[in-house]
View 1: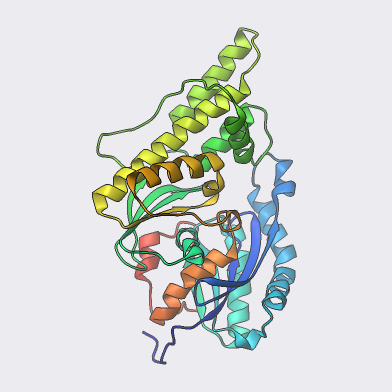
View 2: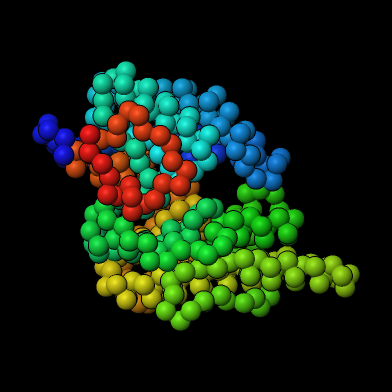
Length: 349
């Protein structure tokens, strides 16, 4: 614990550059967003059909100073008003992470403010704190382009990974299926829209794995979609993109929802949190909301702008460390493989 008396109130400037979004936010007390500025690189990477790490890093370098200034101005504060500087330490693309880490360390040193290295997934989980209070113990269903996980939280700031994907993350699977159906990157929103509009669905497998497992697997489902597409091409038939999209989405969401609800019951969780970029998926939001209402499970889902990568969620998660008086040394390194449990244990300075 830091020797000085730590107040619960905080004004944290947070930086997020783990992938292809350059974002800076100012967050008060871990839940009140004073500003949130995001520079998206989607149009840049669309030409490549996915994120190109070196291009992403260069775009972060071009944007970070301007985004920092804009976030502080929008919050209506002075730099010296800040309590701490937070930044995504990992996981993520190492080059992209480095841009944010260097900016945060420089700013913390120049202002004489504490530095708080923050875990990207903890950020996605604590984006729900922006919506309202979190009740413990709770269960988090994390769904994004790089992660599909069930995380049990016995108390604030504690994380136990009880289930994860064994191959593709759900966001990856959406993008690969979208590519097979002829949609551009990012493909998830296209598949979601098509699935909700389709009147019929191609029947596709549900991958449950072992009876007691909370793990996920989507590579077989992705292969099943490719098989349907290839068979249609071989027979010279029109590809039923709507029916395929609906069948794929129904398979994905049914497994996600069923395993999340089962985990909530097994662990006695008081609340279910939906987190990550795929939390913006309307089909998943709808099915999970309906199921939780039926089961009497309190469900929290962040607004769309806090589902995808953003710095406000990093500020919310960093508040946990602020309350503990746990700072990160200025020799902190970006860690693309940073473990959530390892970050939660933390180190004191």
